Amino acid sequence: MRKSKPIFLDLEKVQRAAHVLKTVAHPTRLRIAELLQDREMTVGEIQECLGTSQSLTSHQLSLMKDRGILKSRKAGKSVYYAVNSPEVIQVLHCLKKC
Image (cartoon, rainbow, N blue to C red):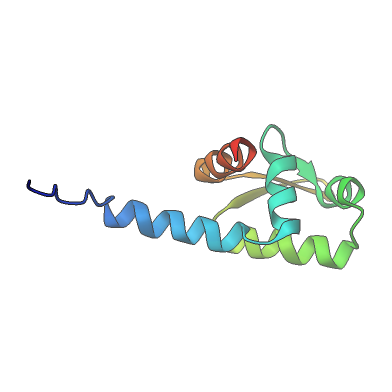
């Protein structure tokens, strides 16, 4: 009986998945991604929902934005954050199924 060859995922997709997983592999960042999957929110709104400090929330948002997971837009004095990477939503859906 011949063993079939393993099927490998495309290297670029695997690298992108690893990047997304490393970035969101933190409880606060996962919760932020979950909050932002359907709408954009300000730092204050996110902070209030999570019950975290402004500095912790801003730090996590900056990290996620720098790594391309989130995007932001400024409106007056407010900065609105939203998911920039559809892969994050796929990861959240996968986690909810597990």
